[in-house]
Image 1 (cartoon, one colour):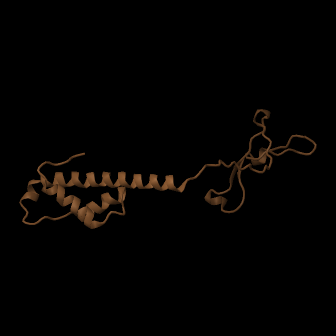
Image 2 (image 1 turned 90 degrees about the horizontal axis):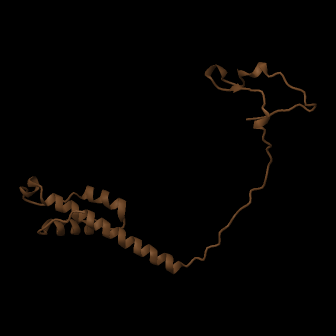
Image 3 (image 1 turned 120 degrees about the vertical axis):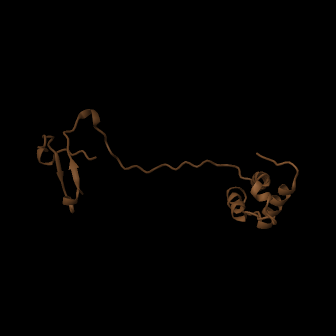
Length: 142
């Protein structure tokens, strides 16, 4: 939006540009402009200002941050473990699975779940959690 004013303050005839096109590729719809008479109630003055930068000094302690990181990793790993064990508990109750001679571990699915919680957990650990729960008496569903 642009507001133009003459040096002597005289009104300008904007009828030729009330609705039109300027520039290239106007036949494709580019360059459409519309002009309206200025209304004093919408008057704004633009000015280039240097933006002030605000800094918030924060006391930073790496030991606390590291401790928080370790705690968060432990919690996410525990959530992952419960999700894997829950999946195994559901699989254990599947009649089709019980008829199988050997256990098929859905490693692709376990990896997919791992990606959301604790990507650093190894495939071997995923398999251990799954097999442990598959062998339990009661399923854990969370």
